[in-house]
Image (cartoon, rainbow, N blue to C red; front, side):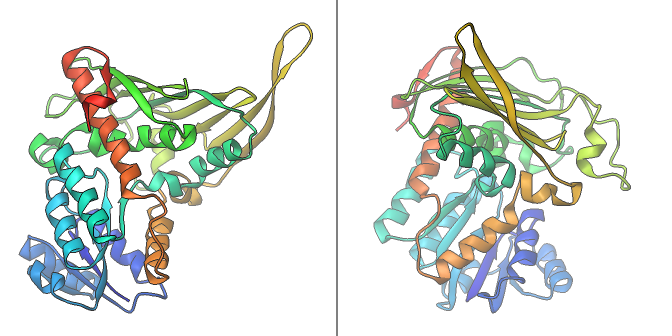
Length: 358
């Protein structure tokens, strides 16, 4: 299979490295709007590279394209690749406007094309374990989820990821991952969302650096996301430390609590643990006990947190075998609707119904 990567920043070059390990892939071509970057990648990774997008679109041997550009280019590149007969994996967020996201889904459905959005947390072992426990009935019906995410200002000054015109918003660029997971776990549809933002702590961010968001499902479940970018990192990128270990003790958190009718689960990035509690309705009171606790070595962090490697390999395999995407684009569009509704709720200071965003 011949595969293209459209956009070769850090994400795109990572894709190339994984694709070179896929037995189904026999050739790779990459493109970028930056001529110097194209030359650098061609030399660094020894792959075919071009600034001419049409060369890739008109190449009938290219079966699959990975869209790894800045967010504002997602619609243009994705729709062009679909119309050219390619299967597509587009990185999240889908697009910077809901109209653009809808156009991407409709283009794929019109041509019965493969379109998947890069929500790689669904491929990450930490969160897959919670999904397994839910599917096995060990938590019962999910009632509540809470994500606490406290980080440093991880993007430096000057990057496109801080600007609304290229990034879109913090919800799309980053937090879409962390509302997509509860959608996957709960299995219902979100009906209403409310969000609030305090003033930014990071002065050079042009997008919000904090959110307090609550959303309700049609199952009755409620999820909450707390995101703050307040504590700056004190480690200053010590190359001798693992990136997770560097942040431990800096007030950083990335932790999920999931409560069901029969039990609860906790996924904790910084302690590298995942635990499950079993509930018991005793004669005198309601009790719980820890029945599973798992951990992993630092060397496996990528597989547990942001497993883009296995996601890339699975997309290649599914396209090679003529299968549809593991997560349909229409499902990813529902997460995208939630993101835009949350942004609107924060801006308006009111509860927003998802029906307002179709």
